[in-house]
Length: 232
Image (cartoon, rainbow, N blue to C red; front, side):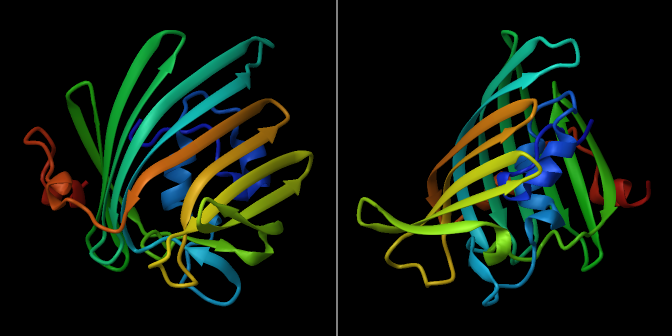
């Protein structure tokens, strides 16, 4: 599977509740940075704030899910993301553990045109790709103001916002913060915690900076060429 699935991000609590029955972790991160449901649109007054268009960050997640046989399954892992929404390039490195087994993935998204993106996935030395039609993928990642209850706060010397969203018995809480040099409509994600009927998940984000290393976007030699992917 090129893209992994399990839980969507907390701001789409209803979507998360419907998706959390999937079997493999890390839909969270793909959903966060690629889904139109997260409100991928240009910054406006209807948004709390938006991530910078160019960024690198790291994170970790911890999840407990109730499986169909009523047993508990625990997932925990780490991820790194490099994204340049101005030029249309993104890389995600994901490592997680399930029942003592470690899984490692690397995904690349490369914008070809305003309507086409090529997705690459590398696992166990095997690289696959597919062409997709864009779903507002390269618009800004924004947090809509209508998404829940907003509380202002401070994290150290940084201005912070707590966003709580509840729907259909599911609850999500997220903290954002803004560094002094950032404009008022920009922010970073700091943490999220989601609880649905059969799962809970916590994410923490750190080491975020407004730049990328372009070497991260170079594809391994075993990956198909862009032209091969486009011809599929």
